Every structure is written in C-alpha cells, then in structure tokens.
Length: 320
Figure 1 (cartoon, rainbow, N blue to C red):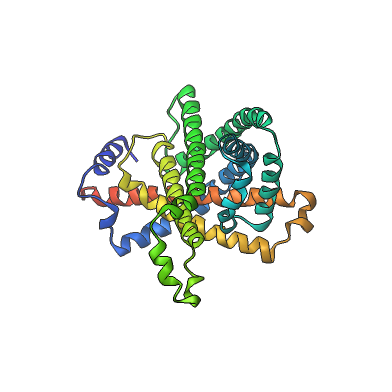
Figure 2: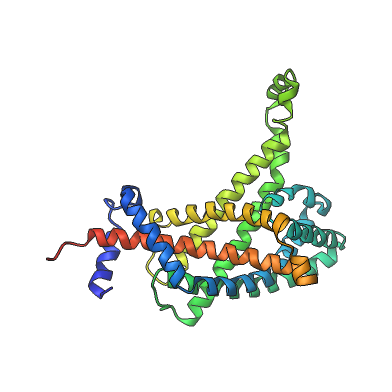
C-alpha cells in the first residue's frame, strides 16, 4: 500500500460513516476467506508456538504470585473452592496440577508467602514480557506493520501490557472470589422461599449456580477486555477507534471459549499425554493449550486487519 493510500486509510477509519456494522454479507464472506488465507500463508503458527513457550514459563510464577497475594489478605484455605470455575476452561490434567500447586502454596507461612510473592512477580513479569513481545511481533505481522518504535518504548509497552494482563487477572479472580459472598447479601430470600414450593426446580437455582453464571460472565468480559487491549496498543501503528477493535476481540473470545471446551474434551477423552510424554505430559498439555490460545489471539487480529482492508478498499475512489 502506497503512502497516499496509507494516509487515506487513516482518514477512513476515523470517519463516522464507515463501520463494521455496515458491511454486507458478501463483504463478511470475503473477509473470512481472506483471513483464513492469511493465517495459512503467514507465520502465525510459529509465532504462537514461541508465545506458548514463554507463556508456559510464566504461568506457574504468575499463579504462585496471585495465590500468594491472596493469602496475604484473605484465608488461603478459601481460594481453592472459589476457583472451581476453572474446571470449565482447563483440561483435567492441567486443573489437577494447579490444585496441587495451590495445596503447596497455602501450606506456606505468611513470611514465606511474602518472599515467594516477590520472587514470583519478578519471574512472571520477565517470562510474560518475553511472550508478550513475541505476541506483539505477531500482531504487527497480522496488521502488515513494521516495528517502528524504539527499543525502550517497545520494552516498556511489553511490560505495560504484561502488567495490565496480570493486574486484570488479579482483579478478576478477586471479583470471582467475592461473588458468592455478595450474592448472599442480596435480597433473594423471597425468591428462594418461592422456589421451596417447587422441589424439582430448586436444584436448578441455588446460590452457587447464580455465582457460577456471574463468574463466567466476568471471565468473558475480562477476556474481551484483554484481547481488545492487545489489538489496540500492540501493533506499531496509530490508535484506531474501538469499533475496529471489538469485532476481532469478540470473535477471538468466542473461539477461545469453544477451543477451551474442545481441547478439554480432547485431553480428557481422546489424547493421552502421559503415555506419550511421560512425566512431561501435563507440561505438554499446557503448552499446547497456550499455543491454541495464542493462535486464536492472532486470528482475531488478522480478522480485524482484513475488516480494515476491506473497508478501505471500498472507500477508495474509482480511478478508471
């Protein structure tokens, strides 16, 4: 794309008359086809593999720091029951491994938790930042951009995105842990008194089911927020309006949820990582899961890129 077209594209994306909501069915069909072609021909799989490796390195220090931070404020014994919702998003072997880690951490004393928290945060930030830089590179490829930010700005951006992701995860976990207690304070007594007259229906509307539903909604919005953050600030380009960010963020979130359920079923019923990889089976499952997740993130970025290209092409004046 020439400099003139690039200048024109920047203007198009800021004009109110252009929006993803105004794209026709034929246009969406063309965008989907172009996205699939770009993913097949591009280095998305290789970039996702590198991100998955460093994300795996950062996973355990990150979880350790989150649990340690929680244990300094609340009773660590209460964290495991509150995080059972993770069973819906993680393969069984991975969830079992996390349970064992939680058991190990909550047995530590408060002073040990303080030291462990500091070490875990440093390790988590380092490994996550490396993975984030790889993901930013993949986003530049998806948006057809060259990295033009200087070294220090690039490093600072990677650390900032990493910190925001970890902070967002911490806040999300805190909200999820607090949801059951908040629901108990709500005036739902009348509702449950009515439900007592219907014994068969009472099993479908206990407080913990409401809490689980709210927890899943919180996780859903957190994932959309995280993906949107990376799509808006990750690529080396001028910031665009949120309406050009949300389509890929929503699509990648839905695909991430589907892949979570599908991968969990695959690991639980079809694959046997233990017999194939031995004691490294759980680690292999974790890395493959992160590879799928990173690939979905790049897919959303590629989808956004093709939406922008389509709108810009349609906005070009016919010079014939």
